[in-house]
Image (cartoon, rainbow, N blue to C red; front, side, top):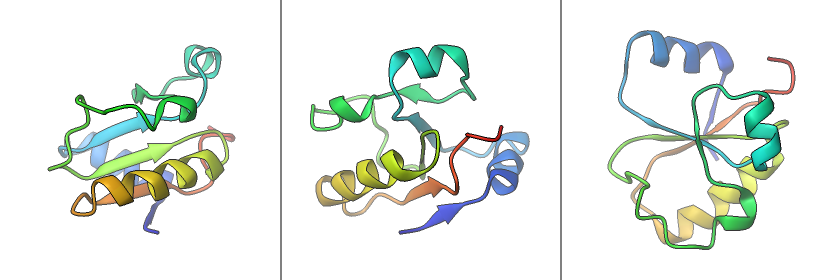
Amino acid sequence: MREISRELLQEWMDAKREFVLIDVREPREHESHNIGGQLIPLSDINKPLDLLKTDLPVVVYCRKGIRSQIAIQRWQRRYPSTEFFNLKAGISDS
């Protein structure tokens, strides 16, 4: 599984690189600390994702990086040609 560091993610954001940023935490977590990702809680990842742009790199994050790994593993089966990145260590220390 590919990972992306917080530093590289920030570089992508600063450079306005096109990618999709997805937060797989729960709504209350998203509300308390949001780095701009689209909220798709882990409990909803098996639902159809019409909003997911699979032609762009997709960066997935959670608090520590575990739930995002699970989400990516499941999505990779459905979207094998999409480039997924797990935010290394999540946003727990952000």
